[in-house]
Length: 226
Image 1: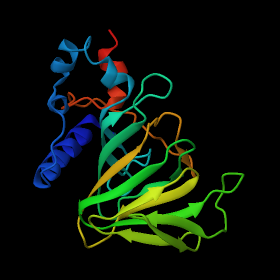
Image 2 (image 1 turned 135 degrees about the horizontal axis):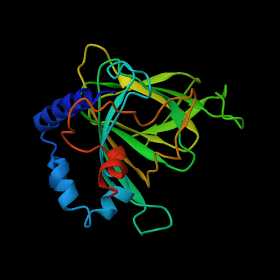
Image 3 (image 1 turned 60 degrees about the vertical axis):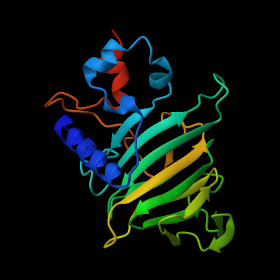
Image 4 (image 1 turned 45 degrees about the horizontal axis):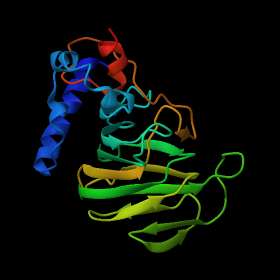
């Protein structure tokens, strides 16, 4: 991805989140100079990869296969006492996050407003392939069951609990607008706890055609290591 594309995605996200009256931490607005001036104070943030996170999953086509995320809080397994994490995400109409599950993390995916979120589900079998077994899940605490590969639509205010080894793919329902999606989960580790059904790139390789508007969580090592 080009840095100019990432910068524009961030600007669009800031506008959308403001329209939904969702406010990010103050450091979300920091420039590169701000980060460098404070780099001795932000180890908690950088080690837990809090902050801006934009990926096209290696597709080269962010609007069709990609995701905007901002990790607001996160614990670190075996290091601190915090056992939970929280993210805010933006999902465009027909913008796919590809099929995946988590080995360790259980999460609630929440439609926080805007359009509708479509989610397709499979159980994983012992070989981590699609199991041809009924999928049991809960929406807002209410039990549901459907055939493998079925889909559900989360409307604003609804949430689904994703247990470990539950394959899920999601995208915004066409004709209903972009979706503000919340995630509340156990500690999050995107470097080792994502099992994608098809190999994808989780973090983008960036062509630096302009200066970063804000650092991504995957930028910290590059820009703050000295």
